[in-house]
Length: 380
Image (cartoon, rainbow, N blue to C red; front, side, top):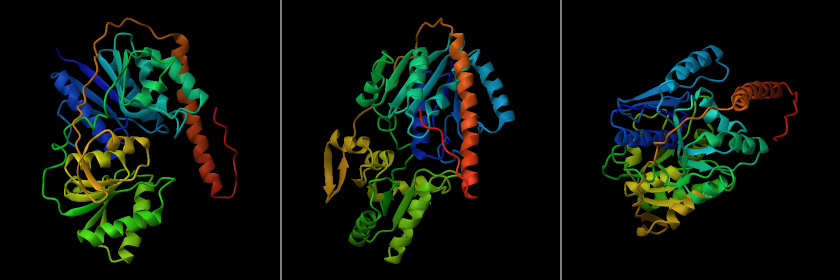
């Protein structure tokens, strides 16, 4: 029987890991529901290098400031929810407020269209950190409308303690998926690095490590930028600094940017030895048989190596065996609920607050250019 599925996640945000999570999730859903039509909410950045199934249709999320576009998309979504079988949220670290107190709302605000018959399923979700009282209260109010939440680790399960009960644990979606349909099996002839800026990352140590790697193997080095946006180039700028310093030392190297380089995935697949801080870079290189030295910017990177057996090594560069498999949770439930009026109003109120917070943010940014200082509201 044909199903209609809508996914709310981080695809289209200019991040390879987020786009891969969405891709493998749609593949799993297509296997589970072969005749389904899948709608994927995507951000402003194009997804050019990953080819989704013909059953997957993108719905572009408009910017908060584009009121006319938002009205048009909301009208389309309201109509879709009238016949929607599953609303899927995930995967990735969506339940946190380290970037904004509105992060959880960004993915759940479509609850305002729920009609009581659509199954709401969380898949492959990361939970935390949650520091603000607003986010904690928001999750208590709206997670009760989920039928089931699948998280990616025990830390995430603990993060939902006292908020939600029907929880299962599965590996990261990319970790548990086969990657050779995205990354071709070809000869290894490059060195690679996937480095993102982090508070505990020392530039001089990174440069020294890459110099040693290059001098040992004398292969061309690519700096792979996993995340880059049209209006934010933090990781790209960081790698440009690395590139400049390496070239001053005579290293043959260049940057490959996921957002802009059409040959990014081919170059990535040709890497034999890699230095990696990004979680999904570590996973992908391990899955295609590269030797990798991890730089643990987050516990999940070190956990990857602790939980999987080292099968080969070249100094500090290792290959591990990853045998875990991802599976979707049960998604079929009998629903018959109505969202309370206060919760419906709360969603609209939070959306209005989110818009005003964005306007204030822009005013602060603009006024700082002229030497003014607008005090920011303390996080609740």
